[in-house]
Structures are given as structure tokens and as C-alpha cells.
Length: 544
Image (cartoon, rainbow, N blue to C red; front, side, top):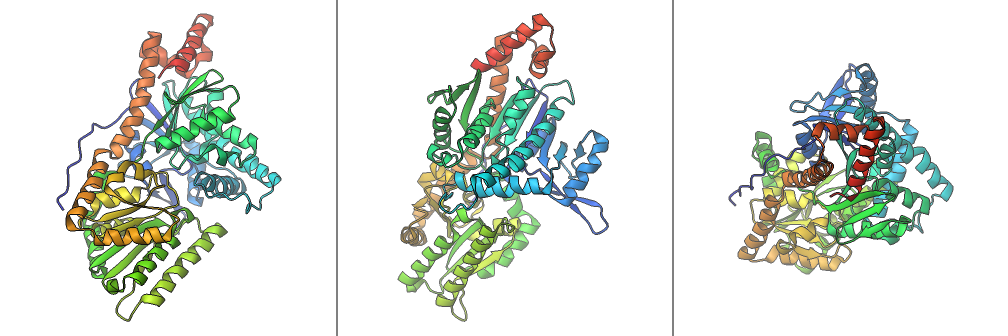
């Protein structure tokens, strides 16, 4: 399969602002303590880190995050000698880092209890209030003494970074760990421009009603303190707007414009489906390490090769996927010894009991299928339990079928990675509930994440498609990903930020310097300029 060239998009960057502040739970660099107690930096994984680092390297940027490891905590202590800032120790990264430490118990309540056990499952439609053992008192404790404390720490660090220089920055917050931080930042800096991107699904308003009203309202009040909120899909946008109309007393919601007005502030919502760096993924498989990894995979291939690449995460629906494969083997014995299922599974959140149980269930399912159908010279499922990105990308060159059957996903980037590196006209079976499904529908074989029999039928169909059908489907998905890659994802966000800045300055008829002063410190002006500041806030409330 010849590699397709991606459409060139100029590198996105900000106008009217020379500073960028990024805030997230996890930073782009993880510090580890070596045996001799020195710090070693390791770049964080993921497309978000790659995209935002790329933007940050072209301007004055600081990334604010919570210290997660002992190395992070030590690095944070050392940074106090340098205004709280850490230089990135990785080659090619120019941005500064500002990590904040909170008590380990507070972080446990923030990260494990609220962010994952509550928000992650609620937003993936997997929260079961009948099984939740936490009392209202316990929930309030973890909210106030965990999630709120973490958000206060991030907001305080962002405020310190805003005030470190006189130039006006743009603040970009990331994901579900920081829903309260925007309101805390807005309280101190009422005219700063903030954008918040949410990587996971935004569910129907009825899901938010499972939470105590004060918590659900605090989440919405925090988010509408942003100027722009980005979601993965238009459905997420619609769900958020419906929730704003329901939970925010006095809010005016315009579904056609995707805007919320609340307490004099206008918030614009947008769908920005995240993507991958097509160039980087292909660079990996063509590297020396990628080619070595590919050679280790080739002996495992059969006439038909099914693959999956997933975190060991309950929302990924792994057991049903393996059960569907077992049904294929049961109904089609002619495939025995001709087919193999290569499963690349990355352990996740092993500190949580629920995840340890899920891990055990997955391993048990694999063992049962191999025991039932395997022979001396054929193991139906070959599993790899590690986080080896090079190996998984190299392997995906060779799949005939890629199974991606999450219960629900904000987007799912495995689909996009597989589509651009595969060399075999591989076909993708994808849950209709994944965000990527809405982008790539025409090139996929759809399935229900819950119906094992339907997934089995989809797998068999994918295995037996004609060569022409396979080629058309593979090309359809590949070209769609190439047209909307990671650069375009970031460019669309920065275009909307720039548009808002541009309209603000144009409507005020101010010079860029004067407008930046008003944006940064409207409260610092004398009476005449206070009028200008009030006018700025009025214009910002009407502008997009």
C-alpha cells in the first residue's frame, strides 16, 4: 500500500498574544529518581502532549501540572529557587514547567476517587449508583478535600504564571480533572482568555443528575467560566448545552450558535475531534526500532490476523471482544489454525481494586479461549501485556482486521493510528459509540459494543470481505485521517482563539499593547480606563 501524502497545514500559532499557559493534571515530562538520587526526565505519552508541546515550542509557554511521582515532587521543590519554574530537560522542548504539589491523600481523593471512580465512569455511561458504596458524606469529603484542593492548586499556579510577566497570555486547560479551575482563575483575572478541551465523552444531563446538585452545578459553573469549551463530537456539545440550560439558573443557551450566557459571561462551545500526527506515526514504523519490532511480529502472523490495541480499562470492553472471537471460532471451524488474534494490552490504574479485577477477568478470558480451541501448534490469542508503543505501531502494519469495541470513547485514536500505518488493506470493526465512528463511518464495519453475537458477525464479515471492498474501506478511513490530522486539530482551536482575540481588539479599536494591558489587569486602571475595561468585558461577552 503506497503511503499517501498528507495535506500540508501551516503550523498553528497565536496572534495578539505571545504567551501560552497550558494546564493539565499530568505534565508533559515525568521526573524519575535514579539510584544515585538524581532526576531523570522522561517525555509523557499521548497526542495531547505532542500537539501542545509543538505549539508551546513556537512561543513563550509554560505547562502547569500536578506533581505525580516522587521525582516530580523533588523537582518541584528545587524549582522554588527559580520562581517555581522548571526548564524542560528534554531535547526539542523549549517550554517551562510549573508543577504543584499537594498532599498525597488529597491527590488520592482527587485523582482516584473523584476523577476516575466518579467522573470517568459517569462520563462513559458506566456509573452505577446502585452499586456505589460511598455515602453522601464520603463523596463530599473527597470532593472538598481532594478534587477542590487540586483545582485550587492548579488555579493558584496559573494565576502566578499570568502575573509573572506583563504580557497577556492565553490559558488552555485540559480534561476532566480541572473542571473547577476556570472559575477560580476567572475570579482573579476576569478578562483573561481561557479555553478548555475535554477529551472524554460528555453525557446526557440525566447522568449528571446522579450527582449531588451542588457538585453538578459547580462543574458547570467552572466550565462556563471559560471563553471556549472544546469537545470531541457535536453530540457532546449538544449534551453540554442541554445540561447548562438545566443546571445553571438564569443561563441563556443558544443551541444554534452553541453559546451559553451566564452571569454576564459568554461561553462558546465547539467540537474539535482530536487526531494523530500522521507523519510521526509513520516515522516510528520506518525507524530502525520500528523495523526491528516488525520483524518480531511477522512470525506470529497467520493467513488471517485480527488485532486489538487497548488500555486494560473497563470502558474498552475487552472481554466481550474476546467472547465474540470465540463465537467466530465456534461457528467457523474452517478458520482454526488459519486465524490468530494478537492483543496488545497496556496495564492501567493498577492501584484501583476495580481495575485489578478487570485485569484478572481479561486474562482469564484469554486463557479459557486458548484452552478450549488451541492446539500444540496454534494459540488462538497471543497477548502482550506492556506499554510498548513502537511494537504496537509496528504490529498494526499487518492486521487484516482491527477490533475496537469500546463501550464508549471520546474519540479513540487506535483507529486512526491503525488506519495510517496499516500495509494490508486492513478493515476496522468499531463500536458505534466511539467518537471516531462519526468521523469515519463510511470506511468501517460497525458493531454494538454490548451485543457479542453482532460483534462476532462483524468480525467474520471483516475477515471475508473481497479484496476490492477491503481496499476501498481502508483507503476511505486512511484518507479521512490524513485530511484531519493532529495539526488541523490544534489549528482549528487556535483559529477560534485568534478570532476571539482579533474581534475583541477590533471592536475596542485599541492597539494590541493597550488591549493586552486591559486584558491582563483591567482593575489597575484609573477611572477613565476603568470605563475601557468595562467596555472590554462587555465586548468579550458579545464577541465570537
